[in-house]
Image 1 (spheres, rainbow, N blue to C red):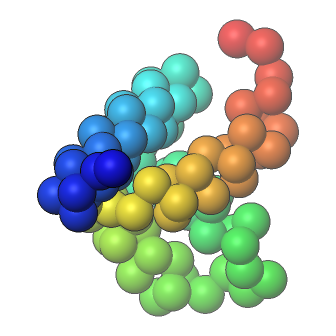
Image 2 (image 1 turned 180 degrees about the horizontal axis):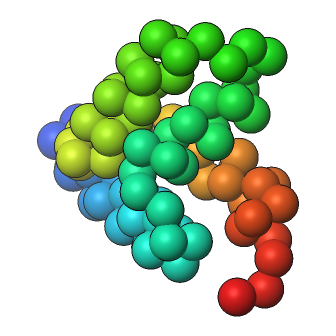
Length: 91
């Protein structure tokens, strides 16, 4: 049975891998993290409020800097990214 500390470490490692994957997607598409965040925001929300987009972008970039970001949140981002038309185009 895993201890709480081991579970936390496992989640951090998973988060690190997911963060690297998201960063690779940015590189593949030639986008900044802020541009990717804007695309994700627009997929999640029905509005294009510039202030809200800027706030989400800032939060998104910070989450990609922290291995303590919940893996579930990062998986949700990857799911959204995988459905973007730009991601599905062959490079």
